[in-house]
Length: 342
Image (cartoon, rainbow, N blue to C red; front, side):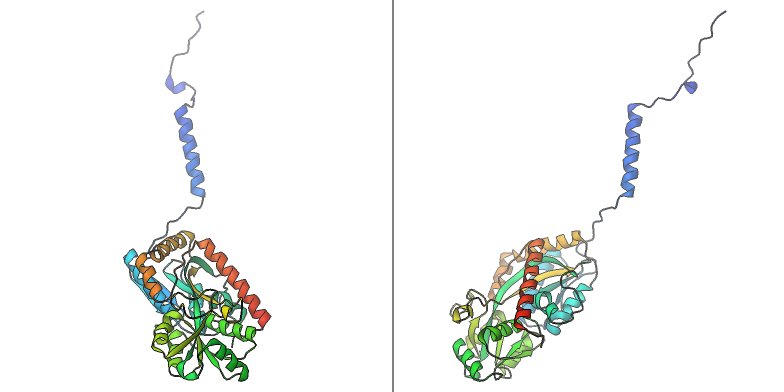
């Protein structure tokens, strides 16, 4: 009896997986897994809707001057209009509140200042969280103010200023760019360290403060050099002392408060770029790169320098750490000196 031998029929043969099939199966698994993972989204930059640079003080003041110098170069680099939007009031807090609640598409950035970011939250309800509502981009400029008096005030030196204030408490008033601004806190700090009582007169920015001190309606002001220098040179204002630890290079003959009898006095001003914390990281990083590119430009550096500003670009992390230190430092001073927001 013959044994039957199975015929070779491919349709009846068992299926065996080859190397190519294994590779295809692995690829399919990877694709399936990738579909379940969150995708990294590249957001549009610069934003198609246009760019707004918020400034918390009136047009013509120091913050506005710095913002417009930077905005012009930024517009050239990006090939897009950058609109400077001045929203003065409450020492810059109005603009900071707008920025904190701003869009998440990176179309709005803010030239943040020391008052709203490091001082005001210790003194009043601001409508924003200075620690959590903003994302740092880069420091813009860092500089001291200068204490000036109207030429008709009869005060020619810092020592005369202190002597007059001690003899006549409440007679000397001082302008500021708003409650809890750097110029306000500089005056309050000198009050505390010198044991004097000068009266705070808040304004909505440097421009209106300048008008009143030139008109003799206010006696003194902790002004930015950019705003006051031409009037110091003309003799309409008299510079008494600068508020940093070093003399301002534009006013080398003007001593610091620290070297005039009050060691350790240091009340510098700074402007820093921030955005809403809602803005995605990739857009924040792009803004950082573009702003540092502008601040490193020699023409921008020279233009800012003519107005008494010192460009000081930083990394995003460095700015965040700096603002945190300023927040803690001025909070401690406010508590210890019992400074109010008036």
